Image (cartoon, rainbow, N blue to C red; front, side, top):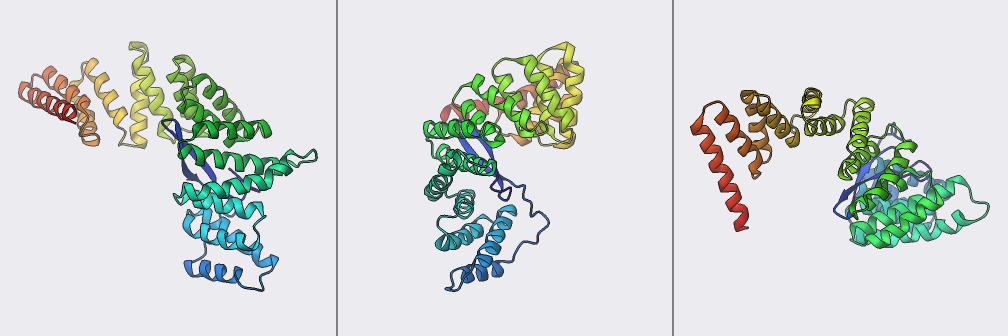
Length: 347
């Protein structure tokens, strides 16, 4: 999400039917030194002084953008709040305050600020002579408010705002991605896929867009489409584990034909991130099926460490030990499975 390409974008992660935010920072000021806490306080005091001028306002606003970039959201919120006292109708300031407040974890306080930012910019975005930059700002404000509302469990209102954002700026990446995630959370796979495809077309190398497209296609039962999307992610961003994990897991589910490639992809995912529970369990199952229980045990033990209250790795360990003729070890793992299942029933 951008405002004059100055502010952090907000990466949205679907959690149930809601959207959850996390900073995804991409500012032009990436080479600029972050101010010290003392400098921030001095700037706030200066802005609140009687003789503040436009140069001070502009310089302080830039400082706020840098604070957003480095993830110092509480300080940024305080700084933009001071600026808003002097410039309550400046979209960049009000939007910056809303963005910083929300990323500080205060969705309720951020909502009226985001609404104010939207009210400031929307009339200009709907004017006949509107500028592309204004359209982008309007979409930014709509997306931010929609995320806040979704976090506050008001998905219908969030959806209406995203529909406006997509209508105003159909090439707005964050609007398309956010719409896809919200629709997915609301159970509309086909709608989500359409928006994810648009997001990928707008940013072909964006790993988030590729990953969410792949997972939604898989969820919708389009295995060939999901396989192609996971492969695209793995090839485009080989340094990320998600593409290798998704592709490897899906290949193993297809049976013998894809097992060799699937094992290689999961192994690659674990090279990147050794703590992937799903990859460990999937490798363990497949290695047992291939008659390699001793190799499976390594992965299944690690899976059990990663998720000690999940019975699946212990069940697979019991199978592996039986295949190796280690009846006592198999019985111990079976007892763990029974204990975990009984504790779940009690809860």
